[in-house]
Amino acid sequence: MAGLTLDTAGALAAARNLGATGWAAAELLLAIRIGMAEGAATHREGETC
Image 1 (cartoon, rainbow, N blue to C red):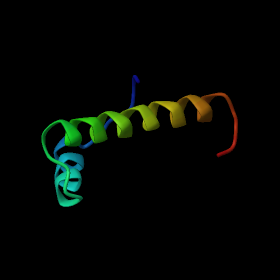
Image 2: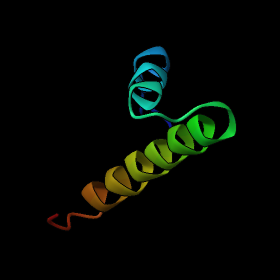
Image 3: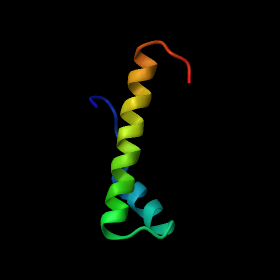
């Protein structure tokens, strides 16, 4: 995931605003990072979203 950045504090605040706490918030952050990586990989391959 080189070159990808995630405002972790902002994403955590958003997760908490959605009612996620503890492990649920961590899982949400992980899902966001995985989605960012998959999107970047798709973009590098030249596919359209």
